[in-house]
Image (cartoon, rainbow, N blue to C red; front, side):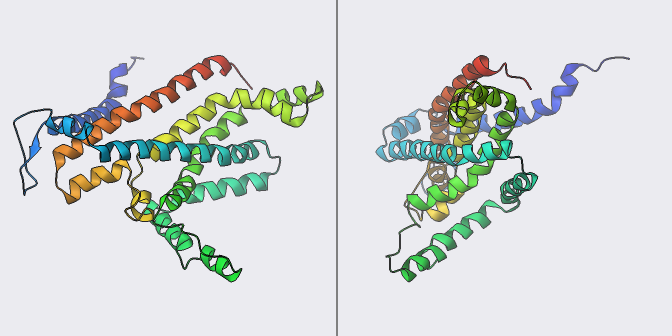
Length: 285
């Protein structure tokens, strides 16, 4: 039988990549132009003025740093909350518990981001059930909306399913017999976990953290709706330049610069994952 050339099998992927890079190349070209005042049109001459302006902007620097800092905090929170849940999902002997956890994780994907954002706006609002309960018990209401707190809560809820489902497979593939052997040799359950399961799950853990960070760093909807304009991340700044100021060249410049900034932590995550994969990737069932 005649074999099909590999290129024929790759052409759908190559086509998608070509479209993506063509759009990105268009953005790069726009970044060297400037907006015609009072219009949404762009014109030359080609220059680096947008880059000089953005790199010297204290506001843009603060938003870039704030976006990365919020993404790091959400990644840490997702790790602390998601790892025990992924471990329980992988190790529980109860099929009902496993099905219940999977159902709660998967059902979140069935509701859109806008639905979840407005749901959190109701829950965290001044007249929401949380603050009403606090008032009923004689406590003052908490400022949970239109600030960073609401953004953090909603984004952690959004990324937890991605984190848990990514890490679940890694823990599931670690033979339970290894933990049992460690306990048979005199180690307690916690010592067996920290000495065996945790190290072997590190490649999957870093992959889950990488996915969480990637989703968070590009967040737009939750900061927009729950931040109330007081929490602005990079995507919100880009949107503002495009839709409110109609300044496409500056929006393109911010996009490119933030992409380059984001590649630094993303590359660090990827290198760490590859290093851990080489060290602990030899585990088999």
